[in-house]
Amino acid sequence: MTKTPVLLLILATAVASAAQEELPSLPVPVTNNAVTAVHVEKQDLVYSFMGLGEQKKWDSVLNDSYALNLRYGKWTTVRSAPGTGRLGAVAVTVGDEVFLLGGFVPDRTGLQAILSDVAVYDPIGLRWYRAPDLPEPVRDTVAGVYRDRYIYIVGGFARSGPTNEVQLYDNQEKKWMKATPYPGSAVFGHAGSLVGNTILFVDGAKTSNVPKEPHFVASDDCWIGRIDRHDPKKITWSKVPPHPGTARYRIAAGGSEKDERVYFAGGSAEIYDYSGIGIDKTPAEPSPVVFAYNLRRNSWETIDTNLANPTMDHHGMIVTSGGLLIVGGMGKGQQVEKSVRLLPKSSK
Image (cartoon, rainbow, N blue to C red; front, side):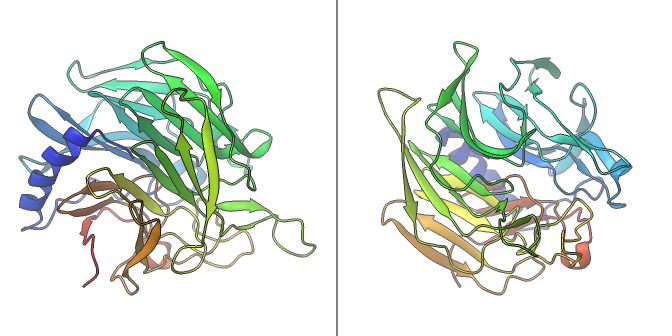
């Protein structure tokens, strides 16, 4: 969900050109997929990893990997990640490699095996290899990259429940460390990105202690963290005001260093399982609100309050100067999408 500035600039041209036509749909409908992009050997590639198929059942989890070559406007199937398919994973790009982290595997009884796996894809060698496992296995987390070297894993759902820990991976030293945890309620299914030395995330689900309420409820907390330039383990966290619209779960999010903004689209006010049905049995529906946080002005901006065909159930967004690239997801009526949409970055 975070890319290097060089990739952002190169990818922007390709997407702006492709936006003159319909962007090609995914080979199959998929939601809850991990999305990122990479520029390698003069090719701009958007990746979609794993996720859930259109049947939305425990055995509909996919282990498929797809790459969209923006020059040729075509999706191709690439080698699947090692192990089983999963949901709730996240993907980031470091250099010219893709890291696929965490996630969970459901079973027919409703139990979830939360994974510590970190798989790395080499687009040049067309191969996967394993990186050191996450110290604390998590799903539905927020991930970002700093200095094209450090991967931050912020919060998520761990084996003991929601966590506010921040896990930090040094890709040069090939080791995990602990960074400063954020001080708010532990959440999962939140959304955000890392831009420059700043982490911003919003919403997600938190544990409810109110009798007769569902066990998990939406959180409207929004947090910003400044990474110490001399010590990447140190983060100074502070709260920011709530964003436009209601608190939501599994919003699509991505950041742009050029724009100095973090963008958000869709998501649902319901906390739901992989079927799209809320834990209170209310069907989840996607929000039509698109908004951004301006890091230069430290303020929220509303882009659209009535987006046509909104989606939810996301883990990542590709941000370019041509727009916001949304890959798959779950639309109205909990329908699993195969569409690839390019949304405007500014209000009409």
